[in-house]
Amino acid sequence: MTIDPLTLLVESGGDSIPLVAIGAKDLGAWAAAQPPRVTNWLNTSSFKAEAGKAVAVPGDDGAVSLVVLGLGSGDDPWVTGNLARSLPIGNYHLQDCIGSSVDFPTWAALAWALGGYRFTRYKSDAPSECAKLAWPDKCDRAYVENAVAGATLARNLVNTPAADLLPDGLEQAARDVASRHDAHIDVIVGDDLIAKNFPMIHAVGRASAVAPRLIDLTWGDASAPKVTLVGKGVCFDSGGLDLKPSSAMALMKKDMGGAATVLGLADMIMAARLAVRLRVLIPAVENAVSGNSFRPGDVLKARNGMSVEIGNTDAEGRLVLADALTEAATEAPALLVDCATLTGAARSALGPELPAMFTDDETLAQDLIEASAATYDPLWRLPLWQPYRKMIDSKIADMNNAGESPFGGAITAALFLKEFAGTTPWVHLDLYAWNPSDRPGRPVGGEAMAQRALYGLIKKRFAKAQ
Image: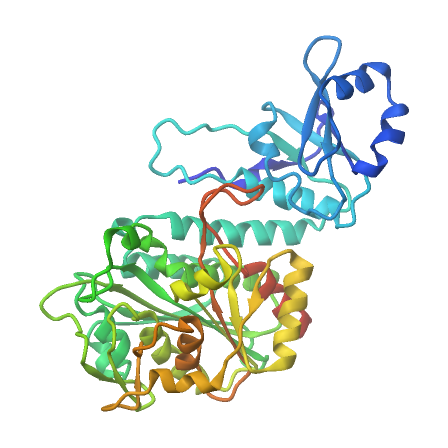
């Protein structure tokens, strides 16, 4: 399917090429102490140690003998993120780092591997080789391996077209994760969703040729603190009968990005054997169009007994999440997280790089913000502004899934979900799950946004390993 990014990190070898990372303010003194051949080459290349800029210095034989990497001001963790693809193929090792304020050995390895990722499943002429980095000394290797594996899993799932990843394919991906960690998995499929009272998951997914399902994965000591992850698994979203325009439908293979993110996060948690009782709930559906599609104006009964008028069939993600959140809340977990590619309004407010975070738990909000900063995995808190709850009132039901107002769409979606999350500590992340352009360490395509931040939060709150 793709080059495993972890293969771009190798054991140290005697024939590898040294790499020196240098901050802009330290460049002059460092360069003055180098052989004239190095200094002259840097001057000829107009190298100023800008963040992420690299110069390959040739030796007497013309081959690369040294790479000098700019750190800029020293606070950018992604400076190695283009090197696996931009440097000549070969093995490199970190010889020195001067002027970085981040944990450079760990981030050098992490950014190198994540930047080398490419989804090549459907490419007949994909390059098979990249530059490789020897595991740096003092690198947190276990964390890098874990974070890269979790992100790779999520990216691969998001990048896979819906033709090869409908609800049955998402179920298989969850089963593969469960099998790797000896986790238990149950799946409720098709009309059994009605029998077991998950009516909104069934209503959203029933029009597809592939039956809707609720994937339920559990792992860990039953006496450990309960952490439950809920991920929106809409494997393709046509918009239902309120059909999306083609421009808005083009990327809808990524509408299961929340499910992909929590599966990758679950993989990280289980691999690290964090001391939690983990539960992952993924309502997996295709929002398709057929003779039995749910309709605008229909009233659906949710798992918690509330009635929901359908104002727009394209606001389907919150419906399937609602049933899953209701089930999650029955166990009163110590932490409940949901991740979803939920609203265009969140993207209008924050753009593609910043997931919107909603919670009314101030301690949880602060802890997640700190975890976000510590892992360079950004998110931004938006308010659960209760006065906007009236925007999703219904004249004939308990609430409307979309409402009529064009304002505050990300907030009203979060307020809708809040009705089903109970009183447990809960956070909702409305994310894009996609990089629309290349950035170091973050190539175009599917992305595991907020995954490292959530892992950091969970690890800090439940630090003891099993």
